[in-house]
Image (cartoon, rainbow, N blue to C red; front, side, top):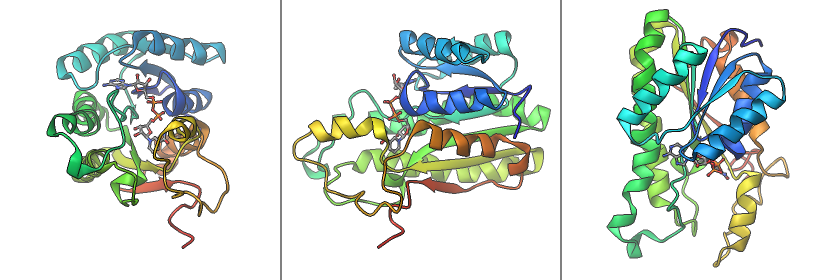
Length: 254
Ligand SMILES: NC(=O)c1ccc[n+]([C@@H]2O[C@H](COP(=O)([O-])OP(=O)(O)OC[C@H]3O[C@@H](n4cnc5c(N)ncnc54)[C@H](O)[C@@H]3O)[C@@H](O)[C@H]2O)c1
């Protein structure tokens, strides 16, 4: 599956899952724009891709700020070319914490919606017209099982709302662009390796909701990257409006 000649933008790609996705897209031949709100992470991500022989540039902007998104994408496209593949990966607000809804303050709710719903809509809106003009585009949303399934004790109601919200919006958008070579899909992740340490450190501990993973390990950026490469490829041109779960079979073995 070659992505030679294609340009991909991955948001929140300075570390962990996003960087894994960017590395996979780069290994398949795409030039990658590494976005992160943290400029040093964006630059480090671009350098990491280049260190493996890829073509990359950093694009530090906050996806929740529409003007910054538009300007950041314009600047990166001037360097690498128009965005063919958008991976909306940024989705965990800096303020994120597990909390029961009943005792949460309303002031803590907006960041989850701002990053997952408005952030992904901002980036998608800024690249969609160009994709439609060129009759090719791939929008890949990184979602979470939390958008579809609730786990007792997880304390992630607003995170789930943000993920479910963007998946719903993108399904509608998929209906508007399917006849113009643009596909829109979501990859819903289970628990990834990078979150394990943080969750282990929390009190009260996370319920053992992943004990039933059919494949007994946690997810890696490379697992998500492999799926993103396929969705971005010509071979996946008939797949749109879908949510594909990448979670080692969690929720399937009960
Ligand atoms: N880690 C998990 O276990 C897990 C599970 C399910 C789904 N996901 C999803 O996978 C995606 C990546 O998760 P991760 O654990 O790699 O995240 P992470 O927090 O380790 O990395 C995300 C990056 O996004 C950047 N970022 C944050 N806000 C931003 C903004 N407004 N604009 C641009 N960049 C921003 C951060 O600086 C960070 O470098 C998220 O959408 C998350 O919801 C992760």
